[in-house]
Image 1 (spheres, rainbow, N blue to C red):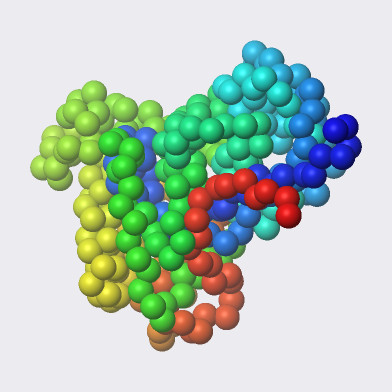
Image 2: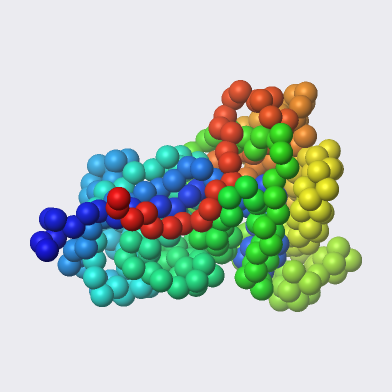
Length: 337
């Protein structure tokens, strides 16, 4: 059968929203994200190179199957594809088209979804953990930003109707069902990119804290108070408290204690604003407004920060601005009919 007669397959990877637990994953901490019903799709057939076009980008990507340095690839979006190719070293390529309903630069992991979809299209056949690890390495290599594993892990391992209590040190997940009658609503605030942001500074500050008091995932508030540098002390205090908030939030969701869940979301945002300094005035204003509305239990910035989105937990039908998102299964291949 000729290549042109082969029916295209689709590699589909969802976006993600993190309900609580930001800037904890790269210290092996706890997070509570969900894969959501916005997707990046790659419609592809086999090829001897990696040839991709995107409905959202002007320039196509054309790559060989052997790539030593993804950072020199052009156009910019091709670096993420190249990172996956570099890590996988696939035996065959693909030709195809990319479409997405995930806001690009919106803090819902559009680049990570692209990486996971590319890996599946190129034939990755390992576990969800292995897929997350491979695409995390690809992201770090391609972007130069030392991001953690949360985004790739939830995109690979999402469970419909559930958020994931995720341990980024042990690389385990515990699905927690989302309560009935509740909307998870995402509002886009501003485009952002982690490249060139202070994200890498935060990673370095946490590493400095760990050199002083040991792993933050095992540290207490008392431990963080002993840190000499005031900035490093604030960063560590956020991480330690955020890990506990994740556990408390998961318990509140299981018990349908939505008021407590909302309180924890707001406390998380305040911590990210004041201790971790990754929020922005526009995000603070959006969270404050959402929290003041009847039927809204809590809100917070979500993701790496410095722009992006905020997420709110509200009674169903309460909020009309933004997107109501639903928890979906993780990335997969859709076979032709």
